Length: 193
Image 1 (cartoon, rainbow, N blue to C red):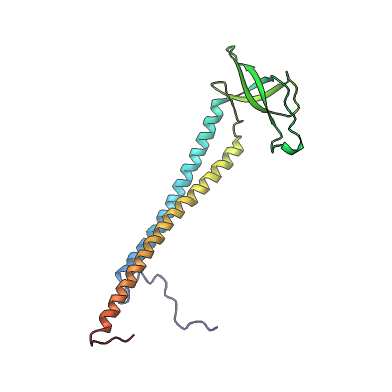
Image 2: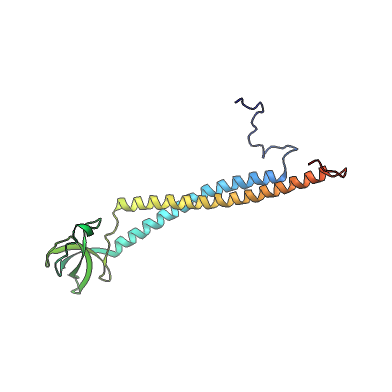
C-alpha cells in the first residue's frame, strides 16, 4: 500500500489556518491541560498515598510491642486438609506486662505446641494481640505499590474526564458542520443528498 502524498501536519490545531475552528483550538487546550493535570495530579496523589502508607505503618509499629507469652492449652493439629498458608493455628496465650497486669488473648501459634510453651506475640497498648508490624522493606514495598496505584488512578480519572470533554466538543463540532452543510445546501431550495 502506497503512502499518502500529503505531508503530515503536526500540531495543526495550534497553527493559524482558515480551516481551523474555535472548537479545534479549545480541544487542543483541553488535551494539553488534561495531560498536564494528569501528570501533576498523578505525581501528587502517588506521593501522598506513599506518605500515608508509610505513616500508617510506622504508627502501627510504634503502637505495638513484642511480648513473650505462655500457651494456656495445647495447640490443635489442623490436619493436612486444613493447613493454612502460614502453617499456624489459633491458641490461647497469657502474658504479664511489666506493671503486673495479666492479659489473655488468642494468637496464631505453631501447631502441636504444648501448653506451657513460650511463644512470641505482638500486643498493642491495651493488651490485645495484633499482627506483627511490617518490616522496613515491607513498608517500602507497600508505599511504592500504593503510590503507583494512587498515581494511576488519579491520572486515569483526569484523562477520563478529558476524554468526556473531547467527546462533547466532537459532538458540538459535528452539529456545527451539519448546520453549515444545511446552510450551504439550501440556498437554491434543493438538497444534494
